[in-house]
Length: 494
Image (cartoon, rainbow, N blue to C red; front, side, top):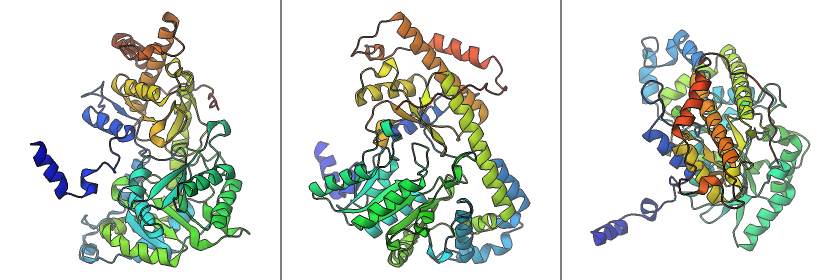
């Protein structure tokens, strides 16, 4: 039997038999735990609540309302079926002109109208995942590398490396200076790659950041543009969270704004990745965008898009929706408002549980700091993983450990807040409070050894299910439909 499997492996490619996709990482393992036992109020009230998925589900009512008023937008309705033949037969990988025009206009709107996008430079792809991989194929050879500031989205390891053979070199950013991307950190990463005989072809940044949930200021962006220009390497800017910035915070600044200023820059080196997965909440539509000033990149990416096109049915619908200026303006404003409210309530309730968060103002998540817990008196990634297993298996919350984001400081976790309704959020927060309450009780009852936290005993933090359930019920029974009380936000520890 063993020989049979060995022969089978020899019949397949290294990609088929290898683990380059990375789905065994804790980031994806948490999703599997959720899929096995998903939370459902009446059916699985003790199931795992999904706090590891960055989706914006707070404005679907606005989308549904628009669809009801605009039946012609879909070719699969009685109102729009007259366009079925023309749309269903079209296979042009350039995309519908009206689709590219609507996307370009929308991208400008979510950036406050301060920059304009040329529809002729809009290249579609199968989500941001496909757009990133396309960019890697266009800019680098197998073995070449991109610099990536840490912490960064775990999916980059799959999106940029798996099929392309491209490497990712971390730019180490630290909490002591709010994970700022500094010139010295960029230079250090670049020199480390050179010493390892690795050719650096570009720098990939995420703005707003995933997982930090912050935006890059103008001076930082100028420094980044200056760095890539000096090194003559590409700059790929992932801006898929552009419309998630709080209204009472500084405006999101796109790299396009910076290069429009009086700054020396070779525009052929500047590229943007965008999608409709986060800003509108359409991950299932797989609408990814490559935008580049480089004509050769645009031409190559457009040819490659034939391997991952957005369906013409989807293009037709999106073009109709995003061409409605009144709807778009209302949606952007309402989405920002609801995200800001949800973020505020979520972080305030975490503060009530004595959990601090990184001071972010964008994204669909918060970057929480659990380094101060007795659970992490042993500051190691092994300790972080043990804590994560407890949160997944006993607290029944899927959160993402910082190590999966390549954070070099154990104890940080990403927690998503926009992919659930208010009642589910209340249950999730109640579980978090119960967990913290349990830890406080244990710390009062047990003197924690300096290098062996109580949760590393043979029972690995044996939470008393009854005590946790009692605490949960005391929280929920107050009023499951009442608004969650507010409290001051605890600043992140750096």
